[in-house]
Image 1 (tube, rainbow, N blue to C red):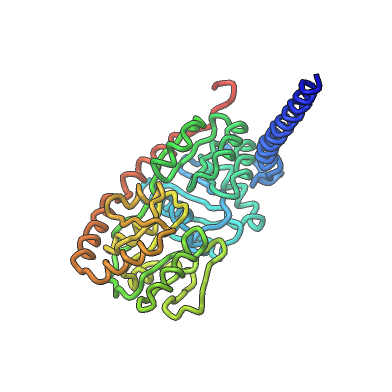
Image 2: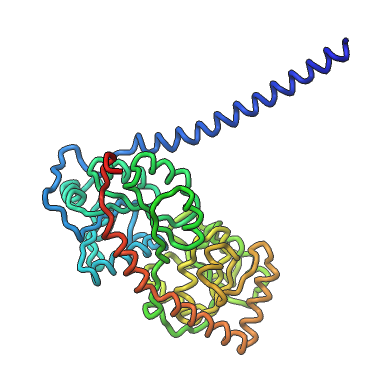
Amino acid sequence: MKEFTSLWNQSKDIIFLIGCVFLLYSLLILNIYLRQWYSVYSAKPYISEAFEKSNVPEQELFTWMIHAYVPDHNAGSEWMAHALNTYWIREKKGRVVVISNKSSVGMYERVVILEKDKQQDAIDAALSRSQLLLTHHTMEPNAVQTSLLLKKPLVVFLHDHGRYKQIREYKRWLGKNLYIVTNSQWLDKFYTPLGVPSCICYPPVSWRDYVVESSREYVTLINVNRNKGGEVLIKIAREMPDIKFLGVKGAYNQQIVNNTLSNIHYISSTPNIKEVYGKTNILLMPSKEESWGRTAIEAMSSGIPVIAHPTPGLLESCGDAGVFCDREDIGAWVREIRRLISDESYYSSCSLACKRRSIELEPEEQMKKTCEWLKKLSWKEPSTE
């Protein structure tokens, strides 16, 4: 009897522990849902309380609500947005307004840029007259509230696989008035279970815009933050003291810099990236996460070989033209760099493959399809769903 009682007490303890674990897990999940809900609930719309909705919307006017824009913020997602914007203006005779937290210019290559909280009347007018609202990254919740207030469809551009919970929450608020644009096939498949209408648009890189004659002076890494491989560059450089490396500081996240190595030269972020490619012999992309890899295609346009970590995005963007090494295997990177530098025949074959790949990714047709898809989007009232 005592043994039975002891066994029962032990069982109760186990059941209690299981219950506690289940409760903690449930609270964790609830906390995640509540945080996503509150991020949208507490977000302020871009439109002012005193706005007057236009009775004459412009069917060719798109308005972006984002944290930063070119030429001040030189990151891949902003240059993707800008390429699509300039195509819309040039080929479709449309207009684009970008609402940014801060900007040093009021217009860039025919794209109107308005500063949030400083040009509210112009912002009200643009949003009120817009056919379509677009956003990405940190300003998404504010854009959701603006979309609801104005009853205009919202398109969220997705540049990575870290927005699944957010998109699920936005769909609860906007229903069928939410749309997404993904930058790769693998990313589109990742978000497919959410059931949000989508379009794929590779980050547009026209190879003609990036062709340069390179002096082949440096082995280059662009954006030396932790994810992009700033530490990996340092480890490789230590193993190759006779090789000159170039580290280009990025526009976001902490940059990993080592000023004690004489064979790494660091420079600041620049909007004129062609100057960097004009000095680059080999481009390194040891990114831990990379949903596409626009930089790789830019470099390939000039026949610059690319050594990359095999993320799903880099495998898709570089294709057979890429040389792939695991970012943790420093020896493999050293061997590939040595081979490209010492074997001119191997370098030439890689260079030719890169040029072919950049031409294959000529973006005009894809941007045309994306803009045609965007133009067809319209607000759907809940009663008609």
